[in-house]
Length: 213
Image 1 (cartoon, helix red, strand yellow):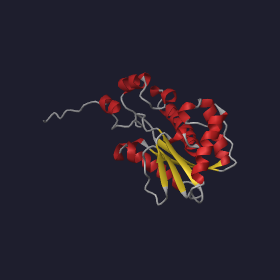
Image 2: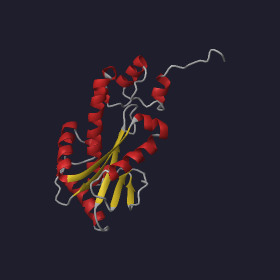
Image 3: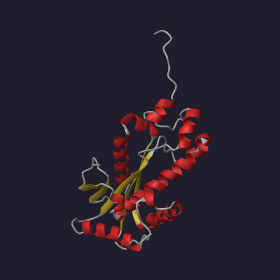
Image 4: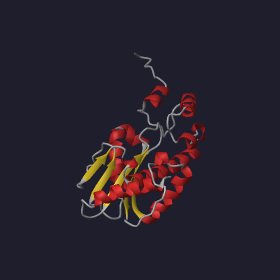
């Protein structure tokens, strides 16, 4: 990863931090799109001397590098994690579930931030100044760090679900709508951890007819 890009991310955060007084947290999520498993959010407060070479949007970082960055961030920053499971997602919808996971992540921080940088067009129901940034994980070091934490945490969760439901091969696709996953879904039907309100899952469920109708 280009070292200059890493510095660019940190420079963005530095410019923002000069305009506020106190601690700034980056907030991002992983798992809005999958057909199974939870949505996971992370909130990260980086300190000025934090060194995270290779930091970027988690989707643009190799899995082996993400794992290393996860532990570097865990050691060098304050991190909060929020998780909303598939049943709650079906009940309140994925957008609201994402907001809830992000709120949980911020509240899980051991220190209350004074300002939030949030990836995407999302406003959190928290009494804190905040700024939503579309594709923020490619602009802000704090948001990029949050994307790494959320992604690695969720991937580990999906690996655990793979052990519980090996027929779906969650370890390979992490619940996303890949050809393999869709084929398994058609073959097996939905598992207890599938999101029943998502179209491909909904279509894979049997239609029940009322014999008395």
